[in-house]
Structure formats: C-alpha cells, structure tokens
Amino acid sequence: MKVISTTKAPAAIGPYSQAIVSGDFLFLSGQIPVDPTTGMVVEGSIEEQAHQVMKNIGEVLNEAGTDWDHVVKTTCFIDDMNNFAKFNEVYEGYFISKPARSCVEASKLPKNVMVEIEVIASMK
Image 1 (cartoon, rainbow, N blue to C red):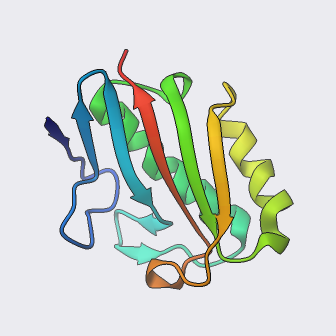
Image 2: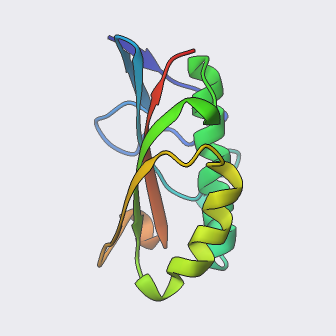
C-alpha cells in the first residue's frame, strides 16, 4: 500500500490518510468542502460546497497520478435530499465518465458540511 498526501487538499482531520493506493486502485477518503489554504469550511450553497469538494478530489487524484476519467465508484453523502438535483448539477460536470455511485442523506456530516464524497479510481 502507498499513502497519498497533498497539501493542495485538506489534511485528514482524524486517524486516516487522504488516499491509499492498493494494487491498481486508489481509495480516496471522504472529502468535505474545506479550503486547504485556510483550513475553513467553504460557506454557502450546496453548489459552492460541492465545487470545493470536487477541487479537493481533483487534487488528490492528481497527486496519485490518476484523473477523473479513471474514477470507477463514488459514494456521496448529502445532508438534505432536497438538494439532490442541485448537487447533481455540479457532480455531472466533473464525473463525465459516469462512474458507479451511491448517494445517501446523512443526518450529520463532519464540521456540519452539506456534502462529502469518497472515491475509488483505477490507476492510469
């Protein structure tokens, strides 16, 4: 296993890694809308928070040497299913290859954010 870490995405806020490469796959821990330059949650709408999550995911994918086209599975957590359509508008702009996905409502996410996404990607 190889640990993946970049300062261009938020540091882990617990006893885990940003991502792990195991064999031919990258397992990216759940990313929340924290701006890595400030360490603060991006305030605003579900769309603004989703864009920050995508930026964070993109940075970890890049650090690992893979990209959006190699994402095979995502698990998405949102705090309110009433925001599902707005979330999807942002999501589909990044995950053009349409990986497999689960999306569930969570009653509470870390730092009270509106969205968290974890990713599994194949390595290039």
